Image 1 (cartoon, rainbow, N blue to C red):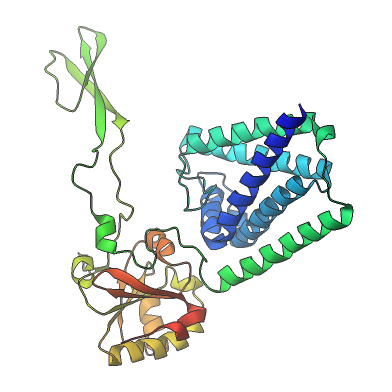
Image 2: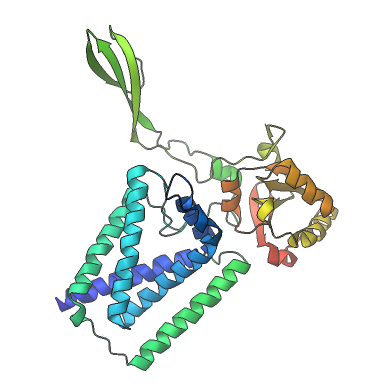
Length: 365
């Protein structure tokens, strides 16, 4: 039993640390995921949406610390019951997402590892079993460290987590797992490789034949049945290849300018997913940076999901010398975790990406 408990302790502790660190690397992204859970039609907890970022930071730091505390054996009863409470809550969320198909990605490992809702639920159930084993064998959990050593390690873990969270919040994630990382080409990310698997569906056609319902399953062709058509249901039996970048467009007046703009040899994108929530003081620096870029021969565009009322107001108030285009809000949130943020591209390849606090780091040549 002792060895089983030790193995479970290592697995659970490391998983909590790794999962927490990945989300701590991108707490803004995790807060977007929490907003999905809080939104109407999911958990209907709209009053929590303004606090999503604060909650995300507290949750991920707690996750990292609980993993450390379990590994070093610090206050083991409190640690195990806290871990149990957290995993029970996560198990409920992942089951709810899977069963009702509300949130298609739980965000358990951020953008580093994508899990389907049912995969996330299975992972949480396995963790739940391991934690129950730890509770049953709690008397077998020992540590060679003294109380002072345990406190020191946990304290250092808390301090390091807080410093790291502060850094990524005021800059960008230290590790970018998204398809819009520096070096990525957007057009290539939208393409489908030759020979990639295509989606396959089964179609269940329902007919009323002589007063009885008859179901005919085909791969898409309308069946020849002598009866009254009732309806059809589709079921995906093979998932097709989905490009890492999809639903990307740069629109103005109903026209998509992305194909042309992604061929620009020198392009600067000023991205503000929601101008109502932007850091307005940053646009003073954006003005200086974009003017300098245009003087160096760069084409500069703004990209936002906000309407003309906001875009024209910002452009006039800060005397911005570029036009705003419309892009889906979720896409903009994925591109850069800063509102506003700035990207520099060369023929669709991202060569620079900065938070509004790091605009001085941009180089134009």
